[in-house]
Length: 463
Image 1 (spheres, rainbow, N blue to C red):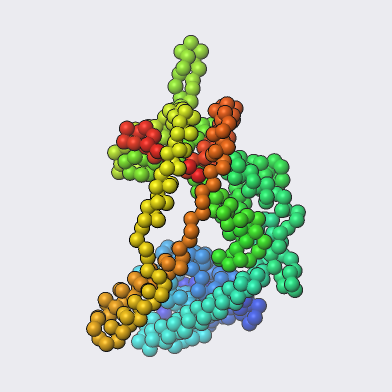
Image 2 (spheres, rainbow, N blue to C red; image 1 turned 135 degrees about the horizontal axis):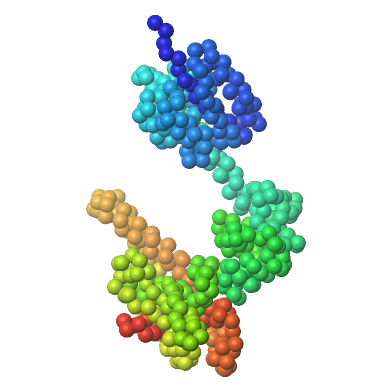
């Protein structure tokens, strides 16, 4: 009695490097597998190709695999045919994830050039696991070698990506006979203007429009996010000095702090001056801006916008008891009237903290820690302490030594900006500012506002 004809899905894959080096083309695999299917009485219902993908690539990035599995679930496939097992998978974890799905729907696979490898026999499964393990190890070894070569190139300042992948403001240049990243004179002015404008106005959309209007109409929000997050602009790559910097470490850190704050203008047009600056007195969460309109003249119907700050952990998550809304106008009025006094109190707090640090008990020196480590080693070698105690104490001493070597002296705070501000009639200057510039004013002056339990200001920390 003849067997039922099997519906066959052909899966083919080749990475770009393999095709270049060994000629393992998609076409060659397709022809070979089509002939195999015909010779074994199978009909081909679909061909699924992952071109330019490695078998170690994350499963979610191999689109042909997903399309094939969808057809498996739809009952369109009886058997999957591929040239070799390493065309299918080189990752044991992903292999068995897919195998579970195939088993559920009664679909099996055939490795056309490796008849001994299968899931039906004990020897076939053993050979399968051996081949998968070897393949995964080969790919991991190659990956580590490439990573090592790239890290060596990075340390030498050599370019490891192409001209088309250069971040804005940079290009490939020759320095001391090697290809390196250098500043692009044609874009240097734009990059400097970008950071100057963003640091001053602290508004992403506003900065985006500024660059589009004055330098590049095609400048996108994605480009903006890249320039605000890429460490190239402070001259490093993976933490290693790599290219000419546009920003110092201090300025880069300041821009990161600005970028992380929610300082966008809402669709309503309201500008929240203190977004990211006020903390909930109940749970410590940063308060978020909210607002409403209210009629101020019943005859004309004139309305006025009011801005408030609320705790979303209370209003949305229901895990805080603070249902109060803090008025932006009240905070603004208080700060304008009490800025000088708050600054004096802040300096007193900072000085008290410095004095407390000076009175702190002295830490052990590195020499004393090394002596204690030697004593600990001797006790363990003589069998007077157990491994668990030895390991715990040794790690603790190593951590103490590491912390000792990383101790840095806090720089003296620079109060020049706030002092100059308080010497002027800053209230008149403030009133002449636009809402966006008022927001930037407070964000350049205040680090954090802390509230009392009655939602009035407790104290202010300055930048």
